[in-house]
Structures are given as structure tokens and as C-alpha cells.
Length: 254
Image (cartoon, rainbow, N blue to C red; front, top):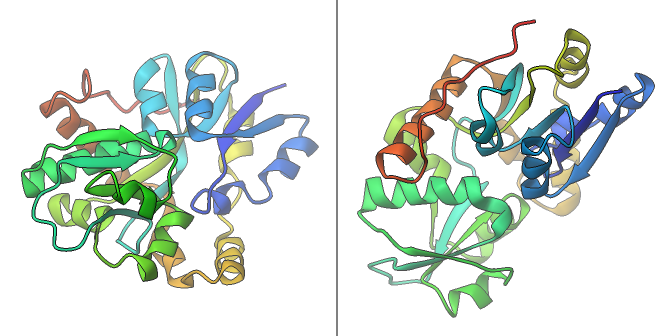
């Protein structure tokens, strides 16, 4: 019985809504956990496949392959990933971030180096935005927290917007990946065969009083532009010495 992991967030909701029931009916199992734990469990062969950050894939590639068709792709800025900073700031020397946002932290590091010439120190924190800003120049926020900060903290960079302006490519937040020797057609069809339920995300955003327009910038197609976006991130990380190599994107082919 295949064992599958995924991290739950607003952005992954359209891919995961209905998947638990679909997998249960097929006799499979899905475990929801924190992103770092999902990435670790995939890398340590605790399961067959996972929806996690591209970092997990890169860590064990080529033993791990990408599952074709689906990913969480940001095609425009809408406030999903923001770098909030104190007003009247002319330099950024320290950035606070949550440990679950390592992939987004690397995006911030690229943008700050490439577009602004800043090389700040990054400090892990679990504090809220205001508390973090008492100790650091800026704080990285993503997901629901980032959308909520649109009204409360207007001084910020939209990192997706900056990334697209820099590269003309989308930013890929999450991918489906699995161990090549464990992936088969049935598993791929199970986890990628459902159409993304963007209405479910709309409904949750309305419930939470968050901008429904944020759904419109998300795509769940792992197309050529998305692949180029992943490769571009790793090329820049390698250039700046932030990743050991530029992993080849290898997809399961059956």
C-alpha cells in the first residue's frame, strides 16, 4: 500500500481537497505534517511520494523523481510570500523567518542579493511579525500570515513579484516527488489525477476574510515555464554558493 505525505497550507489546498478520500478508497494512506517533516520523511524513505518543497527532491535526486503534471505554481504576485520590513529602512542586515519556510527563505536571499545588493543574516523565529521586527530589520512571511499582513504591514516586498520581474518565470512552491523504485502508474494517477479544486480555496479565503483574488495567481500545472522556474532558482542558488549543485529535473516516465 503506497504511503504518501503532504503539507497542508492554503496554497496546497486545491491539490489536496478530496485526495484523502480518493486515496482511502484506493487502499492508500496519506499523512499530513509540517513541510520540513514531509521533506525529511521523503528524503529518509519513510514513504513513497510526497507533496513538498523542491529542496526535498534536490536532496536525493536522481533516486527521487518528480511526478509529472501537478505542482503549486505562483504566476504573479498577490501577497503570498512577502518580506515585511520596518518603515524608513534603507538597508536590511537581519531577516527573521520560520523554519518551515526554508525554500521561501532561499527565494528571499536570491532577491535581496540579485536585486538589492543586500546580504543579511537570517534568524529563525516563531515570533509574530511585530515581535520579530523589534529584533530584526525584516521578517519573511508566507501563506495565510502573508495575506493577513497586506493590510497591517504595507511596507514589504512581494517576493514572487520581484522574482517574476527578475526572471520572467513563475515561482514553484511545491512539487510532487517520489522514490523511483516505488512510483508506478497507479500512484501517479492517484495523486495527480484529480483536477485542482480552486473553489475550495476561494471558499476558505472568503471564510477567513482574505482576498479571493489571491487564488487567481496560482496555477497547478507543472508546465515548461514552471520547470524553467525551478531550474532558475537552483542556478542562482548554486551561483551564490547556497546550494551544492543544479539538480537535473527528472520526471517519472513509467
